[in-house]
View 1 (cartoon, rainbow, N blue to C red):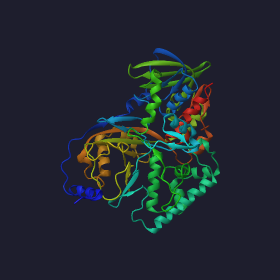
View 2 (cartoon, one colour):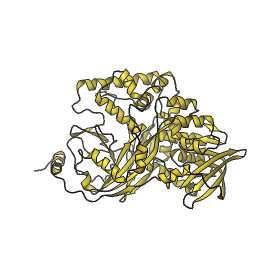
View 3 (cartoon, rainbow, N blue to C red):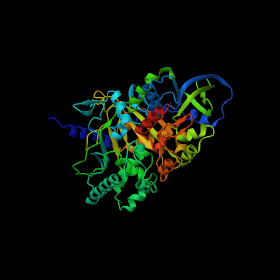
View 4 (tube, rainbow, N blue to C red):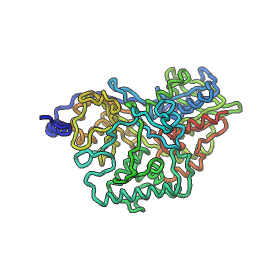
Length: 524
């Protein structure tokens, strides 16, 4: 007798519900970032310069904004530039690695199909061959769009399709879903929301939302359903690093209003947002942005000082490989550094930079890649998906890094799961990231996923954990008003141009890329 796929999965999981076999030894450790190197910023640098180099444009920071600036300079025919990057690999929060030979992300793992406001990102995707015009319409390469099934939620002992809780929720919950959808649509009509943010003017409606937390706004609207609030809290932690009681209502509404809105179940207009993803996440993009730079990309550099003078800019950076101090002379410097770092290293920092640094708060993050010797058995319900989330958990669930690979999706093959945990509203989280051993975070992961995947620990062979002490700016109440006042639209101070997602108040690829691109366009 032939068993259905679902029946086979259910029967295969039954032995796991009893006594589990002893878990094999698990190897692991930290990778991808060097907190010790970053903390060299706190130490005074030697005044002895070992060498001086000159270039027309220096880009301080090799994250997405810095790489976008380098690409824009090359597009304009400006080849005399250099990029200084703290880590051993460019890309910032959009880097990648391999675990036991399998590619996986160290941070951001997808890029939503950009709206028309993000035409710089659209141009990049066209250049990379990800979209092309066919019969007068833009089409995206299906090989790079997230394969189905895209996402699922573990709720009440089984998996459901999609992340909005739907399994046996009461009628009152569905009614609140519809009310929230209506309010998002009303706010979209009342004020423009855009991604990137600088394509929408900051008006009174935005200011009112920016003045309160998302939790306060929901309370004022009478939206108190636990399922809706959990989902919105998850969305805020996913994009902004902290939940409803920390981020502003502007951020919570912007999450939906700058894209395709919020669609309640049964809405005929509902359409799942298309996302581009790869086994290595957004590292697929940053690797292609970095590759043409060659020797112009200088990694393992700790920037200690950026000073302007009559003839341009002087930048001092520690080459950690040789422990020597190098000096760069340039006509212009694109400061593609986090704002708190820029405010520390820019000599005589301008007022708008100091004001922005004082207003910004940062969310720590943890990303864990887990290598499995074989595919996991599954609980009942929706089929294994790219994005998998456990209802009620503080973590953000995991993505299957091999979901796009048909070969890796074969039954029994090894694979890598990438687990995300935002810590922006967890007390002393940054200190814990710095001092807790990797085993602590591994147990946190296994505890979150144990009910959904009882065999996870038994099949895990290696875990690689990446820590981000200042992963992203959190859009807390009042931040957007402060950034607006602090010249948030790609500020410039003489030969210095500032380009980083921080100037948008939160960290996503579209914001960083656009700001880097536009900063390079200002180079005379």
